[in-house]
Length: 81
Image (cartoon, rainbow, N blue to C red; front, side, top):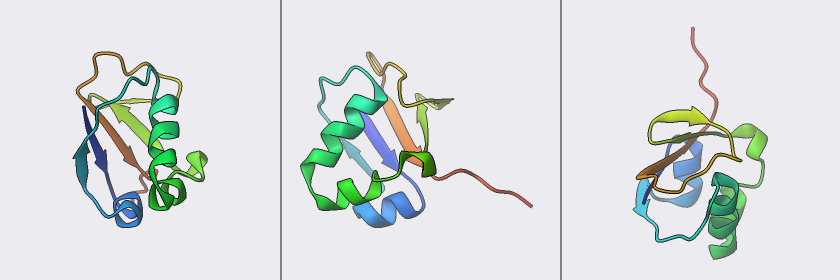
């Protein structure tokens, strides 16, 4: 599945996108796998309350299933003006 990173998440991880092979069942499981990879991922996902997630371009929460998903995106909350 493709995992996309936006804004400061991308800056901390150093990639805008990567393809990940995973057995994770939920977004939270995927985050745990990513955090275990190396320190830059651990730092990027250290405060989940500061992140939003979309699965196949639908906003969701970290307990959402990713079974069969093609894409998961992580980004900070949007602000507008």
